[in-house]
Image (cartoon, rainbow, N blue to C red; front, top):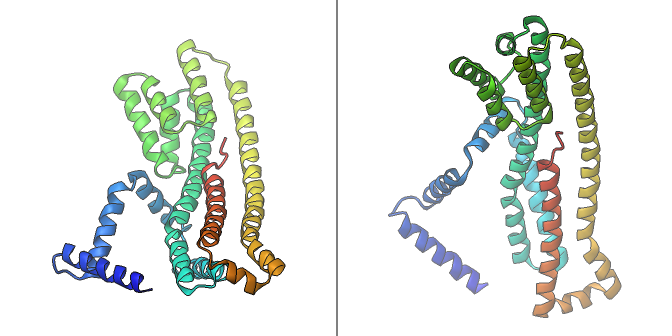
Length: 297
């Protein structure tokens, strides 16, 4: 305990000296913010802004509940595993520190789903416009003017139009959109438009109708996959949390007093810490997989 107190005092002194006499808490806050902004991808800033605009971000009440649940749960695990107040506090702080990472994963999934929906709108309505205009660029202009697209896809379609007029053909604009949104339905539609533009095919209505049917089938499959993944995610979390309860089974087998006596052994304490870390890593990997691999196509 004395070592912990001395460590806190030393950290305070070093921080205070580094801040050149400024308020320590303000200095730490500004330093953390500058480091975060230095390494934070610009795309993530856009993503967070869009999530807030869509009203999908957590409310302050939800953040408080998340802090209480994660912090309280980690403290409970620390107590059941080690019967040590300091370990409880450390575990609770670590769990709360993971909240920004979990929020990032959740936002990334929501943003990916939003982009997929926008791309679906872009592809479907471009094909519908082409049936009327029989010109790819005019179709893009019609989609933009309809007001159904939102940022950032709206700006990218405007860039496609500008590139088409600047270069005199659609090749570079299509390459730009394919690289920005590597969805199969985007590439397939663009490939068909390139073929029509170069070969001058006239009877394309049936082909585009078939493509629209394929898109509808794809979207249906994506939403079914999301529901299945959400169900599996709940089961995965329940299983992962249940793994933490294994220590209770161990204590029931050997008695609580015997278990506490075992914890006096440094090797046993390290082993128990490793057990908690492995289970936590398992849960975080599962969360990462669920939120990053959204199965859009």
